[in-house]
Structures are given as structure tokens and as C-alpha cells.
Length: 115
Image (cartoon, rainbow, N blue to C red):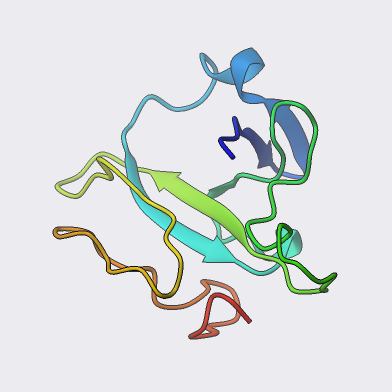
């Protein structure tokens, strides 16, 4: 299921279509995953909700109810490294050539992103 995203900055949620011209224009340079909306790293934006107001938790579509949460976050900086593509894959899928895996959550350093 495709989702459009919203961004939470400093505990405020915004519809991307409303604020896209207000976000920094630098390229996305780093993408990560966090376990808690209260643990967003400095200088990072977190994708906290979709434009329709739904929770953007990457884990929520699991079959069973769980207190486990995972949110995508990113930073924008001018530099030699920029994100040009990204793909969410199942743990069983092979990582496409040229892609770098996110090995752990940024806030808790959990090595498994699915538990």
C-alpha cells in the first residue's frame, strides 16, 4: 500500500503538501529508523504521520497488535552523500545492488528493525 507522508518537526505535525516549500532545500543525506517519536536525533525530521492523518509507524501493519514502533527519519545536508533512492524490503528479500541497509535503530541501537 503506497502512503504519502507528513513530517513532525519539534513536536508539531505538518501535511507535506502544506509545508514542502518551507522545508530546507538541501538534499536528503541520511535516512534512519527510530523506535520513539520522543527520541528524534538533533537535526533530523521524522515521518510521523501520513497526509491523511494516519500514524506512519512502519511496524503498525503487523498481524498482531504490538507496542513495537518504527519511524523513518532523515536529515538534509549539502555534502558528497545524498539519498537518491530507498526501498522498504521484507527481511527475507535480497537487498538491491547499490543499496546500503539500515542496520539498527538510531535511538536504541537495536540491531533488528523488526522486533
